[in-house]
Each structure stands twice: as C-alpha cells, then as structure tokens.
Image (cartoon, rainbow over all chains, first blue to last red; front, side, top):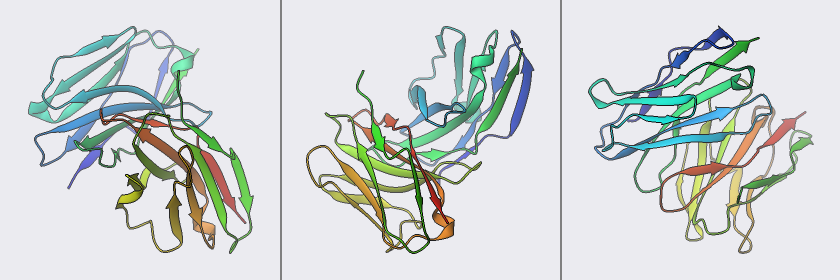
Length: 114
Length: 112
C-alpha cells in the first residue's frame, strides 16, 4: 500500500525566513513519481514539481528547492526567503507509473507573517 | 497556457437532489480524474477514466456516483441523490502520458 506522511500540520514563519516542509512516503513499487502541490487560500491545487524514483538529483527553482532521498524515503521542500504570498497549504503526493491515482499527504499549512 | 476548467465554482443543493459537476480537461490529455476534499482535510481520489471507461475507483465512489465523457471535451461527475456528507470541494484533473496531473479550480458543493 502507498502512503504519504506530512508530519507538520502547521508551520508559521516570519517573512524572509527559510522553511522546510517534510514529506515521507511508503511504496513497494520501484517506479513511482513524487509531487508537490500548493493550495492557496483561493482553493485551487497548483502543481509545483514532479520527481521520478530514478532521479535523486536535487532541484532548485527560484526560491524553491527539493531534496529527494530514497534512502530515507523522503522528498522535502524548502522555501528560501519566504514571502507572504507563500502562505498556503502544501501537499506532497505519490503516484505509481501508469497514470494511477495520486495519493496525497494530509498537507502542511504554511503561514508567512510580515 | 492550457488549463483545466470546472463549472460551477459553487453549487448549493438540497439533500436528495441530483447534481452534475462539469469539467473541461486540457485538450490533448487522455487520462481524467475526480478527487474530493472535505473542508480542512486531505485530497481523496474518487475515480479515474481512460479510453471512455472507468479505469479505477475508490471505495467512496459508490452507486450514487457516475462519470461520463459525453463529447470530446467535457467530463462530468454526477451524484444521484446527494447526502450531507457529500459536501466538499470536488477537483477534476487531467494528465497526458507523463503522469503529471493538472487540477482544475474545483467546485465547492454544499448539501443542505
């Protein structure tokens, strides 16, 4: 069975601080994909990143970076120099290959205070 | 940039009534999904659809639910007789062969 755990329910930081959102996953498959989605207060789900199980290279996109470690089954997300607009719920998700359903974590609510 | 659209954005209905939620997936995508999110909770899978048939469904997707792709663009979710516990945000998503699912803005369903 697949499972995604986001242990941090809520995080609050002051603007310009760095913040890391944790994600731990469980799967028996050797081929899988990991995702992060952002859900701002307006409610939509915004795709941020997709990582396949064979690519452990870390990725940086502007102030966002992701650290994928298969040895610890983790796919953590760091926001550098946080801004108020980063305030949202962030979901980590897992899918096997073959366009199967996404399994979501419970989400981490990030509040960035000015 | 192509995007998934959903209508209506908010639907209020009486318990026992039928509702149809509509989605227009991204045009060259072949895989379609419905998910729901009860307020404050995680996003849960309902059903996936490929090649004009259901490919997978969850335990939530019981006989009260059905999906249809009536033409080349729309993808609908029907709830035959709504219950109070069906109140949630319903998200449509579509994907191409890359396994990346793009979500619509959601329909907030309120059952009174």
